[in-house]
Structures are given as structure tokens and as C-alpha cells.
Length: 479
Ligand code: LRH
Picture 1 (cartoon, rainbow, N blue to C red):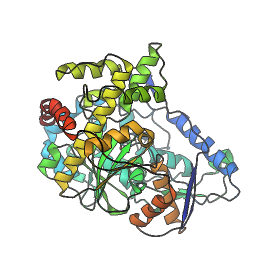
Picture 2 (picture 1 turned 90 degrees about the vertical axis):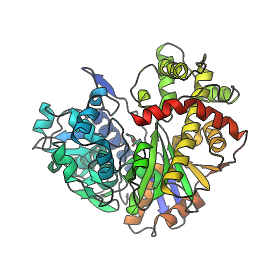
Picture 3 (picture 1 turned 90 degrees about the horizontal axis):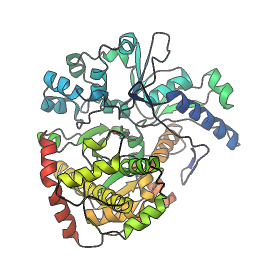
Picture 4 (picture 1 turned 45 degrees about the horizontal axis):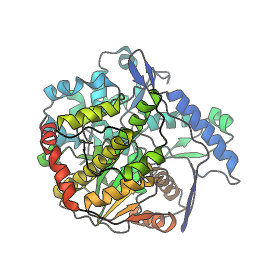
């Protein structure tokens, strides 16, 4: 994506898009990291050729928690493992035997997600790759290293490792020591808005970019950049960054580390400009993507817009599932898992792809409502507007259902909030624009197309649907 920024204009232009297809090898799900790096180089080349002015800067963001290991010569020790791989299945027990969950939450403020980096590192203990590792680089830091030869650990993404103390915004040596994790593997922390090196000669040759093109550290966690990209005009906003995941919550200036917050499985990830992203992970459109993949593998191809249109006329709230349930994390037959979850909670299983789609969207809207209500209750803040950013902002049914479920107006867009948030931090670092997050958001608000949804319908229907899941959700939280 190439962004063009002035103090009162902001445009984004897609110059290259490439697939990100994980590969299962020897029973382990990997990222195809070299193909992703090649996609980055091709994209940079397209960016270099597509503009008449040299690029001011490059910023990198990606999904969180995953990492590559390098040996002493800087060579990659194997393909990074995908966070949806099941290798962490037993790691939570190992970790909680060493550090009680309440103590881990008090120290790190992270919700329990089975794939947080600490669980991956505990699962990788004793492997030859970890034994040989000299350095660990989170995915965007790995790409930055390959572009510049300079190694750093960008802070917003570092906070998803569960090895950072959200009060000090620094490593938590006690947690690392107790779990036998060597913090020296991580290169020094760097803040968004700081230099991250200039391009290596082979990158210049492959892309045609100008010498000294700087790489700038941005919110390298995609969700951190997406939250920068929320076009809020008042401080009383909630956000839902929807794409593969729905990340629903609030922006705070200090973490909430209470026991109630832990039991509600809320996370305190670190944001740009000293903020905290207080949110819960909800399965997101992954549920639907994985259904489509399952149907397609069975020879039953569906056109998403047609399916969504039909789902908008399907019976509302016929059955709902807990869209926060970790049982949906791994790839595999999603329609069957959804049907099984409906049976478990005494509801009719969806019978057709249209009914499954409606069940997914109703369930996501219900989970959005629950997360935002919990966030308000646990933080003591009030909310008057919900912003939906990310790919899900294009999904009109999801946006309307979320407005209905939350009983609040929803402002949808921009879909490319992460790329915009990334570009804005680069532009501010380069001195093209100035100001804090409210000023950056004002620029987004005045330049990006947004769509507003007002809450409609019978609000009590959502209460009744929520009560169908309550028993199941309490059990999940207590576990
Ligand atoms: C979204 C995301 C999310 C993480 C998950 C691993 O892309 O970064 O914030 O929890 O991927």
C-alpha cells in the first residue's frame, strides 16, 4: 500500500496484493515466510515504479505473537510456526503449574490465548531450533531485519508475547526466568515512531528503491495500527477491528489488571503513543472464511456477497454460538463444529450454508456486544459510538447486526485502517504531519469514506439469545 499524506489530505493506493497461504508440513502448520518476504519485495518494487516521487519511508505491520528464530550467522532456523498450530495444547498447564494464572495476569495483563508467544516458547522447549537460536524476531521485525539488517523488537507487538509488563512497558524478567525463557533472544525494544534502519543493497537491487529509504517502526502489531486508524471524533468510542479476528474494546491510558478483568479474559496490549488496547479476541470472520473453505473443498463453491444477501433475509438469532470459544481456533471442518456447538447449547443446528452464515454473523454481533459491555463495566468508561474498522467494515449485515446488538450507532470504515494507521505514524515521524492520536484521527475522519448504522429492531431478542449461551460461557471462563 502506498499512502500519500499532507496536513489535510490522506490517500491510500494498493500497488500489490499477494496470498498468505500456510503450509502443513510433517504435521505442523507453518507460515510460508519466504513467499511473504518475496511478496513484500514485489510490492516495494511496484511502489517504487508507481510513483514519481521517492518514498519517504516504509512501515511494516502484521499479525501478532508469531516469530522466526535466527542462528548466530543471522540465518533463519526453519519456517515460523503458525499460531493456529496445535503444538501449544499442553503448554497452558505447564505455565500455570509454574505461575498461577492470577499472578501471570497481574504481571502481564494479557488475556489467555493458547497461542501467546510464551506458550509457543514453552511448547518449543528442548527443540533443536530453539537450542540453536541466537535471536528471536517477531514477524514484522523479521521482515524489517531482512530489509535493513537491523534487529529490534517493536513494542506494541512485543506486548503480545505475554513477556511485557504493561505498567512499565518493559520486559518482565521474573515471568521469563520462571518459565526458562531467555530474554536475550529478543533484540532491544523500539517504540513506534522511531527509525528502524535503511534498505540493504540486495533490497535496493530487487526493488529499485532509492538509497537511504528509511524503514520506520510503526505499530507493527496490525491491531495497534488499526486502532490508530479509527476515525473517532470523541473520546467516548469503542472499536471493533474486524477481519480474520474481531478485536473489540477500548483505548485506555493505563492497564486494567483486576481479577474481574482476568476472569472476563480481557487483554491489555500496548498501543501507539503510550496507550493500552483493552480488548477481547473474538473469532471474527475466520468462522465464515473457514466455512467457505470447507464447502469449497467439498465441491460446493459459494459467492460471498450472494451468501450474505441471502443471510440478511434468514431467520434472525435462530441459533448462536460463543464466538470467543477457543474450540474454533484451529483450521478444520467449521460448519460441523458450529453445528456441534449449537447442539451442545440446545439450539437447532444450521441446515444450509445460508443458515450457517446467519448463525456466524449473529454470533459475532452478540460477541461484539458482550465484549463492549464487559469493557465498559471493567474499565468504568462510557461509550457513545462503536467504530468498525478492517475488512468487516464492508460487511453491511455484520455492521447493522452489531449496531442492533450493541444498541449503539456504528461508524464503519476505513477497511484499510491498519495500513492507514501505519502510514500516519510514518508521516508523523517524517514531520509531514503533527499532533497526537486525536489529530491523526481527525484527518482520517475528514478524508475517508465512512458509513453510519443506527440500531434497529427488538433489543430484547439479543438478551434472550445471550441467555442461551450464558451457561456455556461461564464454564469457559472458569476453566
Ligand atoms: C490480528 C491479530 C490479533 C492477534 C492475532 C494473532 O491479525 O494480530 O490481534 O491476536 O492476529
